[in-house]
Length: 228
Image (cartoon, rainbow, N blue to C red; front, side):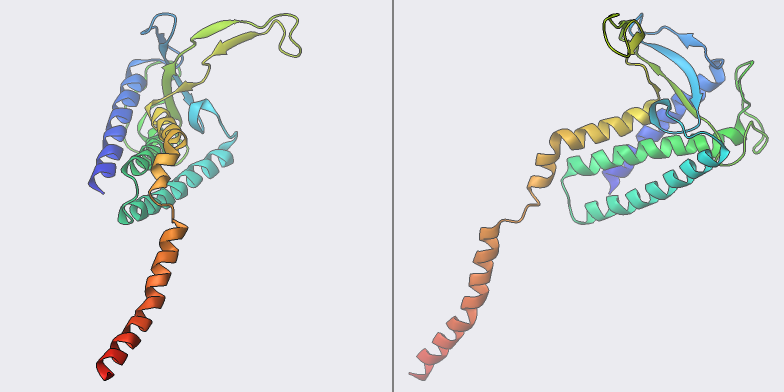
């Protein structure tokens, strides 16, 4: 259990260092073209899910934050069960990445609203606990990585989207989102390796059954031989 817990800890530390730095050194909407035209740091915040997706309204935010907490508790139970059963280490670490990413965004939702100023007109700064821009579970998730690798316009002859601008990759995300994505992608790519060792072979079951059935016969034969 030490290895997945260490991975979760490292992801959380890196994630929170990046978020706190961006939140306290950038104004909302400020960008820093670190990677030329291919990518940049762009400070944004959202109320909800990974890659800037949201559930509107304060009740939507509360429901989403509560669901995240319940989901993480369930995944921790699942992770402990996987470790107990000595499941494939790659699968265990993939689940740990997903858990770490979820916790990273939960921290924003639970506490950032209580310890930071809004940062709308200036850079955010730490404030006494409970005197921030929002209450418990209503904080906003900090995003900063933006990679508009391809930009242009769809051909005018294309139905529906003809002439409209397109950007790939449009979503703005954070380190926690990246951890979740890596964990999910690893499971999808390596699922055969992850689960192959846990498949039950019918021949093995038949052999075991034959051995169990044959044992009483062997005892009977041994008893007959001793009587003779």
